[in-house]
Image 1: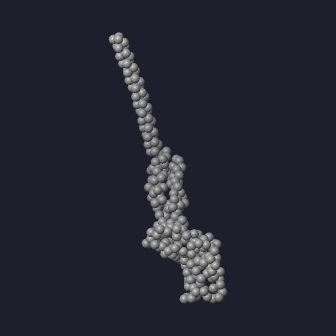
Image 2: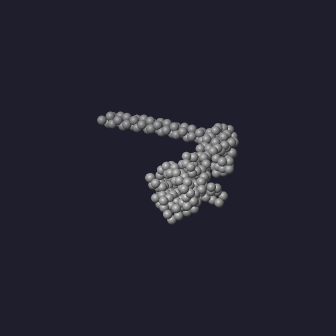
Image 3: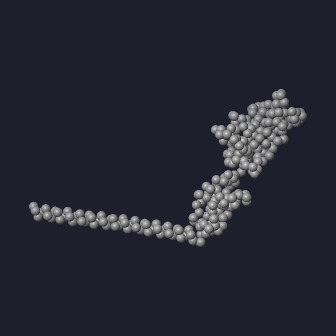
Length: 268
């Protein structure tokens, strides 16, 4: 019994030594893998830093397209790009965000052309109208306000009035006005957008326009602008033939089958 106990003890001790040896070998393998990954990461970082600082990819040309010449220099200034940079080190997403913060820039696309050129394609914000809120703002072709009107800005655009600052439905109303402006600018109506001076939006969103050549207002409502503008031409033609056009104070076309014409204090 004593002999077997000693042998069993020696067997257990050998198994423990073997287990410790396997565990130690496994630990060494893990350490070697981690060391290899560290060396590889260091080599990649060092290589990237070397390539980034190398004159091989030094930025030499910045080509700005899609905007007016007056904005090209402004685009480069806002981007913060210098020609001492490496083309690889340029943060395109960050530069795009910076340039698009300019009120006259709608969108930006950047492209690297190795080894020395960066292309910047920017799209101008194009106003189609002004809107009077707490102050005067430019309105884009999508019906959004994008910039306060300043002293040196050109203001040769129709003016939108009647909206309250912060109104919940302002966006919907502005898009409706832009749809009307698109129609007037399409050449499909007798009234051109150049003749339009003001668009008044009432609380329900119905539109009333003021045209430079006529001393009266025209109520168009909220829809069917093309049909109503055609009707307006017929009404004006009739009023001219009867020599009563100069007496008109308003024409209301917001009806399905008629036009209401106001002459001074009377209605016809």
